[in-house]
Length: 106
Image 1 (cartoon, one colour):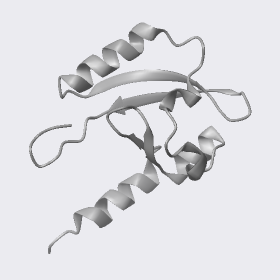
Image 2 (spheres, rainbow, N blue to C red):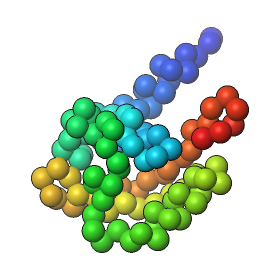
Image 3 (cartoon, rainbow, N blue to C red):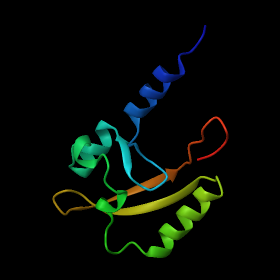
Image 4 (tube, rainbow, N blue to C red):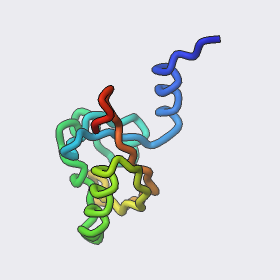
């Protein structure tokens, strides 16, 4: 039986909190679970930097490490302290994974 990878990915995205950015950190996608948690509609997030959710307690060094790993084409696990649209704090234990094109570039 041949599995449709796109259908498989859509099923996975329904069970996790998911967002995607371009290489500049601009949000390109956010699933329903992410939107519910953050309080934003997807259209409010698209094109915005992910730091729209950044809590002031998050240290710059955490993001420097994250981007260093991504630039090295490695995943990075991080606990994000965020602020939702209403100003409430929430945490996400996250795995940030680079996505590669057909040439192996991010």
